[in-house]
Length: 521
Image (cartoon, rainbow, N blue to C red; front, side, top):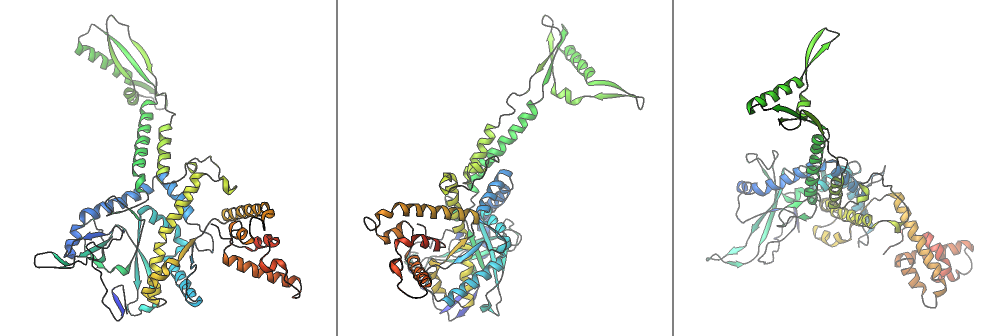
């Protein structure tokens, strides 16, 4: 059995079994699919159009993230997903019901802590998650020592998303003399193309990188053709552009309509058109030029009022109408109305799945009862959980490579244990305590209400599983604790009592107090 990582082969190499199929393998990771027999340099030139569009998207996402309203929404999302506190890691490894020895589990936890150290996740968790959320993708170069492969990953180096691209080279199997496929076995050879100067520059040199040398974590969102990875900011592009244009239009309208303007009706009598215009210009010039005497210097200066000339209107008036008249054109009357701007602000927040209440600064934050949480906050919480689950692919990929390099597990064993490995992100401690205490109080209230029905319509086991939400492990552990406490109270002598036999109903209050982390359906 051989293991191929980072271009190196560990052990004896065996031929990989490929099953016949008329369709290439599908992995929704936004990689560029190339036809068979495409060259290395031709590959890069063929990618120019698609890669350029994807790179432009990354630049657009970065530009969007610095807009004030978008930045506030992104900060709310990242702050909810990543909880940092002194001395506590933002994420922990949960092995669950993993069917491995305690020794192997300890090794897996140790290697996971090493991955967290290499990422500097305790200090850089906010920046790493924010970059992944904004750009929709993360690339890390996995650096190892070729002379000491068993020493594992030595460094994780972050890569710019505009300089690297994943490629899939298709192989359509064997063909007959007439060009038809005789044995359909379409496979895909994967690799990465990297350019230090950026993939947008045609003349920039590119290098081909083995897929195992790169850790690639993306948002999982694809465009309609399923060829490009999109960021979670993509659906906010239109609302943000509308908000920008409306704000610019509002500012322009306020600047142009805020001041009051004067309208000068100048009586030009029966003067011909040319002379009437000249007369009007002379009046305007006399109004514009104002001689001012400076008492300090003794000079007479000409004070020109150009701004007033631009703001006022001068109109000629023929003989037979009114004489010279000066009236006032009022400014805008709806300058204080921002309903349209607020509408698009709310639309922007909705597109980012952020509750509208967070947009209003005068809205207080309540840590009251769990049942009083609004539907928008509940939906937002589920959205954060989905983001955390998707982001965990970063740890999964790195942990897999680290365990295989260190020889903790074999490559084929990872597929079996992968489903039982999860990652628990830190939560706000005060909010979690309030939530758990409210749930426990509600269960105990239900337990008191059902006291008269136990043994008549409800069994003790049903009450423990459906009201107290205790699983088999909790029941077994609590029963042991009750028996031990009964022995201690009786001085190690006598019977264990009815409560110790099956965890009687009279001890439910003590059982609930012993539950450190009750299982919740």
